[in-house]
Image (cartoon, rainbow, N blue to C red):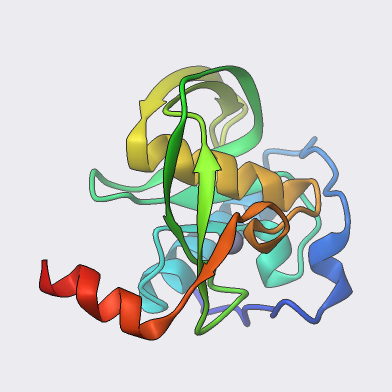
Length: 159
Ligand code: ZN
């Protein structure tokens, strides 16, 4: 495993649409392993392949219940709404309020090409929306309702 460099908001790679994965080979497994290591090292809860300069439809996330790898993820259905703070490893030092669905049903392939379906709520639903957005060149700053400033964050943490 190896750490990969996370590209930042100025990089136009983040604005490109990623292509589906067709080969479930050693190269994909290495990418997934590296992405997980890079995400944990950066204390992130999610990372999409374009963030490490690979334009393929691959994301990893861990919202506290263990590592989830998704290859070629598709949002099947969404329900409800939640409004909450969001950040991104490619947009360091900033956070914003983003409205996302409360529940998300998604299908995806694992590293061997097997299809799965997941129903997610709250933070995991938010994370799935954020990461799949990356695969279509969208960043949370495009959809946030407003920026969150440092003094607000301190107040939140004190609560
Ligand atoms: Zn992000």
